[in-house]
Amino acid sequence: MNLASLFERLRRARATAFCPYFTVGYPNVAASIRWAEIASRSGAQVIEVGVPFSDPQADGPTIQAASQVALAAGARVGDAFAMVSAIRQAGAALPVMMSYYNPIHALGEEAFVQRAAAAGAAGLIVPDLPLEESGALREIARNRGLDLVALVAPTTRDERIAGIAAQAAGFLYLVAVTGVTGARRGSQSDLSAYVARVRAQTELPLCVGFGIATPGDGAAVAQIADGVIVGSAITECLRKALAAGGEAAADAALTHLVGEFCEAVNS
Image 1: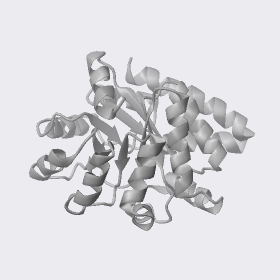
Image 2: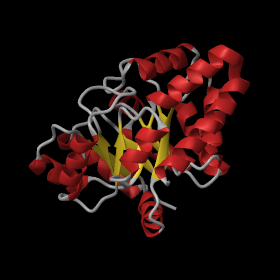
Image 3: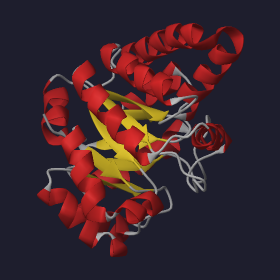
Image 4: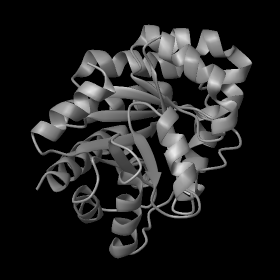
């Protein structure tokens, strides 16, 4: 299954995708892979596999801290491919890799995409790669069956949204707020207008992320979007559970939270 067929199936079922984000290697590689598997078995349809990076420009303090822990523990790009493979084996969820461009460039675009495709990735998100510089990677990804997912922001002009959408594949990632990732969100009316503005430019599925803090937030976003992406709230839940009771407590907390989100976005 690819992203297009997944979102078509969800559309026919009038369902919304829940898409949690995990930092590879936080707090260690084994735990992060296990948590991705738990999310897959608990009902998530898409899982964002975050390659840790030393300068994650789009991420707020929660995911920045997780990246620093992961890098200090020795996480590497190869561990991200291992997580992708584990997700594919664990259930029906589709893994989408999120990496800043530097790790892709260091490994080589061809090599990165080849390994991602071999592991079973359905798509790739590169938040710091501008549309004008993404052509080569997009072509390589397309040839390997990967969708290069593009991002738009509330400040993106309509004509640029149309240009981005014309080149995008899989889904469009709608950044819900101006600024970095983190558990806060703008007004629902502003978000509704923003989503409607993007829908006028494309027939691609629209997934909203940044600032979705609670299952209630997810339920509200699900009324207007095709997918709900949650990263910082998931990471913060895991951080608190780890501090209180270790990895077993984190496993239980994650299972509960993913279940709550999956129920909320399809209530």
